[in-house]
Length: 316
Image 1: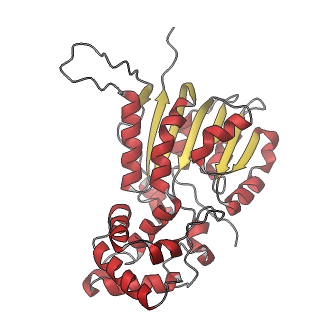
Image 2: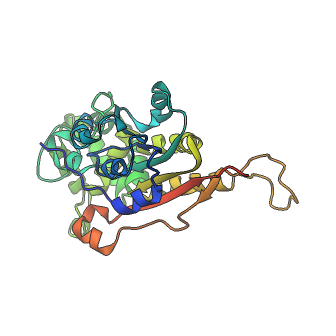
Image 3: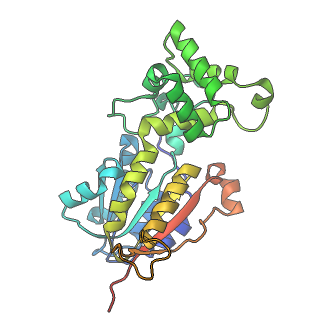
């Protein structure tokens, strides 16, 4: 199956990076290379782009798409959580811009064998973005305690019927292990009241999203990586992050706000004594959203939000 992914907020993201022809940029979620292609187009022979992705299919597709740029582009298969380490290995300590597009690719969602889909196809429960890792959706569904499943479904999927779904999963796996996406989808449907199933989007959507986030540690990786990524920026450099989940957006918003206003002194102190200095400024006071035209063209863009932070420029 060919790797396909429509880059969300493509023009807005690349323009927000303010690409300098001789700069160094990192696309930490390379995907099919859509954003990276537009960045690389703006680079001179003195510029450099490093693309990082943990999905082997994405790395292969992006390598083909970006091949025309030669040694201006370096592709690394890894999780962006190890961005700093991997860049240091190739002699890069600071960069001029970082981009993260945290959306799941169309390829991952549409390829039934990856186990992300809750549609009609039936495939082994997997949901790993990096298929070298051990934890799969099958293990989450069959071994997590019902209380943990409830928490995951409620927090990561904002699933109203989380407790009922968790109970149904626990009961079913006592009879036999839950092996496939089709089995899990049916269990979820059976746990949701008929009236709710008839309303809105697919009844398994939220639960599958929650399990995918748990399998890949998506929120934990994001939260643990933001501080280091901001520290890697050159003065005036920017980090641009596109999220698709309310918890992702909140993590980014809070991290950017803390980087701008890190002081922890009580409000009634006349001067700051904690010694924490601002690292820069938030460029997007409100998140940048897709246009109506883009959402019509690509329905998966509807939940996208983009936030941008700029590293403090050196003082004269």
